[in-house]
Structures are given as structure tokens and as C-alpha cells.
Image (spheres, rainbow, N blue to C red):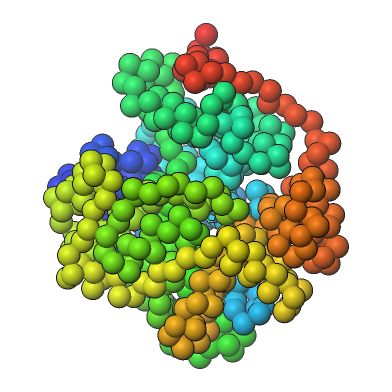
Amino acid sequence: MDILYRSTRGHGKEIASAQAILSGIAPDGGLYIPVSIPSLDRQFGDLACLDYSRLAHYIISRFLTDLDLDTLRECVDSAYDSKYDDNRIVPVVEKAGAHFIELFHGPTLAFKDMALTMLPHLLKAAAAKEKNDRKIVILTATSGDTGKAALEGFAGVKGTSIIVFYPRDGVSQIQERQMTTQEGDNTHVIAIEGNFDDAQNGVKAIFGDREFAAELEKNGYMFSSANSINIGRLIPQIVYYVHAYLELLKSKKIAEGESINIIVPTGNFGNILAAYYSRKMGLPVNMLICASNINNVLTDFINTGIYDRNRKFIVTSSPAMDILVSSNLERLLYDLVEKDPDMIKRLISDLSEKGEFSITDSMREGLDEFFGGFATEQETFESIKYVYDNSGYLIDTHTAVGYSVYKDYVKKTGDDRPAVIASTASPFKFPGSVAGAIDNKYRDMDEFSLLEVLSWMSGTKIPGPLKDIESKKVVHKKSCGTGEMRHMVREALGMG
Ligand SMILES: *Cc1c(COP(=O)(O)O)cnc(C)c1O
């Protein structure tokens, strides 16, 4: 069955996946969604025999039906290789009463690698199929994790260039060093004299600048997005939920057909949407538990049907979840409003004009399978300590938010069926918060020296990508004011 894609906002035509991946966002500002969701048409017992790459190939090829199987095989094999420091790619471990899906074994130690090691290859395949011979330029503003994951993904990929802008004072010591030491002739990293909003607004302005786009086109370039609005990022994320289920099946933690709960520490709603799609494919999932930090817009939305971004933005120890507008929620809304694009447009315009929207009681029924909860900073740190004291296992701050909300869920509902928690980052990425949660004396220590402490605490080695990062050569030293971003892009692309 061919799967086509359409925008959440328009009655526009249905397009093949290659086109949707190349465009990133739809011309009407909406997000591309698959018109129908393919089902898992093989027995779980058969699927359980596949290794991670083969399972990924099976699932991704069910969605990207216009790309041929051999091309997709190359995409999958190029993504999930020795870049991952564990040959299982995604280990699933049982600790402190839950199963953690370890999504952080890729090159940047966060779950975004799961899709961003694949996206460059999907983009190239899509460009070839669409006979697009322009060079693809990925332009990204980052508050830390996305930038590095995109750099790693696109570094050295022929036919692409990547330019990342980050706020000079808005990323952690380790995050900055991860980016400025990035190798690869096609990578460009530039610090902005400003905050993340400045960087983000600058990039958005460039994306919307038609004259600039024409100038690029004349020089043989086109812009694309590595943001999680790209459907090419969403689909590879479905794989690990199916994989986790199969792992529980293989280790006899569940019987065939038995349902599980899934907990996802959520920011932009991309990761949990992938879990939701895995259920639509037929994976036996009981409850999707959406975990937020104190920026708990989504908790309120799931519990009341009102999405209200009119509140203070709070900086927390789980920065990837400090988000007030979760862009991928629009894809879930599309299902809740029963695929009525006019209704979507109304909700989105309410959000931009009033900062809030609300859905009707009948739409809320679609949320019955979601549980929303949040964790305070203190609860987050307590979870890190509890899991460590209980099992000697270190979890990062984002995963700890998930664990805390999971505990609340069990207490509230008594539903203690097997549960998997998306473990979205390595604890080594947030050494100050993680070591500090376990013992206060580490709170204000230098992040680089704390890597050793975490290694000692957990009895595991410092992950390769962070080892020696302090002494690694800084190759990207450019910075610019917010008014000079176009100039920097021209310079990076050799457009004079
Ligand atoms: C991006 C990120 C998240 C949030 O994921 P979404 O798909 O945006 O909901 C959670 N944890 C970590 C570590 C991340 O990098």
C-alpha cells in the first residue's frame, strides 16, 4: 500500500514522502502527516528475530513507500553503524522497577541521534528521487542538543552543508565544546551575540526571505530543515518503541499481545508522537504517559483540554524540555479534530493571537489514552538519587522527569503493568545536575572534572565522544551579531 502525505492545515494535494522530506514544512505552514498509518503486518515472533537495523528497515519502508527498498537499506545501514557505542544500538535495561530504552548510544549521546544519523541519507535519497541536483543546506538554530546531533549527522555527507547558529551565552560548557570541535569540511558553527530566541528568529527570517532563497538557488543551493517538524525525523523514532516491546517479549517479561505503558520525557512532542504512531501501527500500548518538567503546558492540556502558553518560561535542569509551544502537537490535534484542517487553522491562530486554545469535550476523548504529569526540579533530583541508590544506575535529568511522573502514575492508578521509559540522554551530558542530585558537594564543580566522578559512581567508562573533549582542538571560532547572519551564510557557502 502506498502511503501519501498531506499538510495538517490545508486541503492541499497529497504528496509522496520524498517531497515531504525535502520540503520539511508544508507551504501553508502546516506539518506533513501520513494520510494513513500502515499496520505491523508481521507476527511479533518474526519481528523479534530482526536486529535493530533490519527492524528499522521494515518499519521505515512501510512509511516511505516511494523510496526503493535497497536505497532504504543503505540509509539504515549508514545510520546505525559503529557510530553507536553499543552494537545493540538501543539497549533496553530493567532498573528500579522500570525498563529504560537507552536512546543515547549515538555520537552525541542524546536520542536525537536516532533520527539525525538517518535524516541526511533520507534527504539525499529524496533529492535523488525528485531529481533535485542542488546542494542541500541545513540551517539550524540550537539551544544545545539539536545542533550537535545535526552536525554529526550531516558531517561529511556529500551534497549537503550544515550551518549551526548557537547563542554564545545560552549553551553549557560541554555543549559548546561539542560543537566547536566538530570535524567535517561541510560543517559550519557560528556563535551569535544574543540569546536562543535571537538565533532562532534570525534563522526563521532567513527561511522566509524569498530574495535570499533566489540568490541561493542561483548558486546551486537549497535550504532544508533538520528540525523535528520534518517527517523524516519522526518515522525513524517509531522503531525503538516496537524494538522495546520485542525486547520485553524476548526476555519473557511480557507474553505476546500483552500491553505495556510508555513514558516519554517531552518537549516538542516529537518523541511521544512517534510512540503514539507505534500504537496506531498495532503495537499493544495501554497508556502513553507524557512527562513534562515545570514548564507543564502539556500536562494541563491533557488534563483540561486547554493549551495555554501564557505563563513564565522557566529554565530547568532538563533544558531540552523547556518549551512552551510544542510544535509536533499539531499532528496529534489533527487526529483529535478528525482531520478537519479548518479547525486546526482556528486552533493555531488562537494560539498565536491569544496564546491559548481549547478543544471540545468530544475531541478530548481522543486524549483518553494519554496521561499527563510533571515533575518539579526537586522531584527530578530525587528520582536520580532514588534510582541510583536502588540500583547503582545513573539516569539523566530528562529521563528522571519521566521516572518521577511514572511513579506518580502508578500511585494514582495502581496500573503497574510493564512500563518502558524513553531514556533520552546520557547522564554524562549533564554531569553537574546528575552528580549534584546524588551528593550536594558536587553541585558547583567544573563539568569536565565531574565526568570522572560519574564514571566512578556508575562503574562505566566516560563515553568516547566526551572523553578528552576538553583538550580537543577547537576548529570553529566564528561569531557574529544578529544582523550579520546572512553574511555568515554567504561566507560559509563561498558565495562571496
Ligand atoms: C529533544 C529532547 C527531549 C524532548 O523531545 P521531543 O521530541 O522534543 O518531545 C527530551 N530529552 C532530551 C534529552 C532531548 O534532547
